[in-house]
Amino acid sequence: MQSIHWFPGHMAKARRELTESLKRVDTVLELVDARLPRASSNPMLRDMIGRKPKALVMTRCDLADPVQTRRWEQQLRADGPVVCVDARTGSGIRDVLPALEQAAAEKRQRDAARGIRPRPLRTLVVGIPNVGKSSLINRLAGRAATKTGDRPGITKTQQWIRLGNVELLDTPGVLWPKFEDETSAYILAVSGAIKAEILDPSVVCAYFLVWCASHYPDALRSRYGITALPDTTWTGPAEGWEAVEPVLAQIAQRRGLIGAGGKEDLERAAQVVLREVQTGVLGRMTFEWAESGPLKPAPPAPAE
Ligand SMILES: Nc1nc2c(ncn2[C@@H]2O[C@H](COP(=O)(O)OP(=O)(O)OP(=O)(O)O)[C@@H](O)[C@H]2O)c(=O)[nH]1
Ligand SMILES: [Mg+2]
Image 1 (cartoon, rainbow, N blue to C red):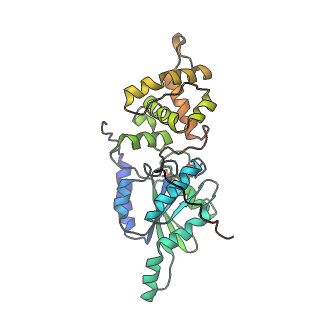
Image 2 (image 1 turned 90 degrees about the horizontal axis):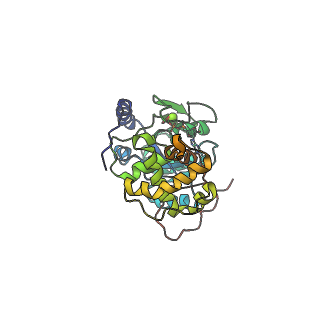
Image 3 (image 1 turned 90 degrees about the vertical axis):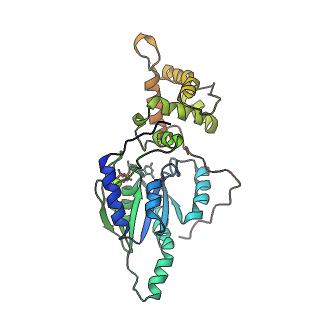
């Protein structure tokens, strides 16, 4: 694909600050979006974090497909503790601090062996913009300790928030300078993590409709009354657009999105679809499926 350069100056600054802060923390809490757990994990952060103890939090579990979330959780657990949350309502967050302690268990033991008294875990909270870092911190703190908002770039500077046994460092979301693969870029745009305009909203929507037709066909049928779904896999923007044009025309008709000359406004229809996907109107969905295989039984719920 064409390489997309869009790394703004403030991101470079955020990256430098993260490198500095990493030296001063004991653990890292990495947040990814449960609907795209790999595509929303910043490869640059992974390299920077290195071997520092880390726990992973999947946010927006309320919007993701629960079967896929369980699959991802099982796969990702191979690399350390994983917690699934809805950072907006706080569902699942009581498992976050125990997961951090679990990640830091070895360090705690080392400290104890050296006679160092236990002190609050200093934790860096990282993730792409808008993934829910500040929302999660506020839920953990039980108060509006840091500002949140429904668009990327709300947190501008790092900020420490002290809770009983941990000190959390809220950070501005960071992205990476260049997308290596086209699919990740599309998935990030479908989720709203990056602006669809960076690619092209119509193409992003075409990618989604082609993918959705084979993964969640009922969502398209019930929301838009589409009967003839695109029967193809994504091979590129030109072929993808050709496959979804009739579908978008049908959506435009139903929504009364008719432009000058009585023609369906396909671009507006594409924008409507993307907005509805992002807000969960199409139903719970995971845009990046985990490898399939037998699901292990869910772990027993922790005792109250
Ligand atoms: N549905 C849902 N919405 C969430 C969840 N977590 C966060 N949000 C919403 O997502 C938006 C972004 O949340 P923030 O906490 O500001 O995200 P952030 O990661 O701090 O973003 P930056 O500071 O810009 O990097 C807000 O509108 C939240 O209400 C979640 O688990 N589920
Ligand atoms: Mg924030």
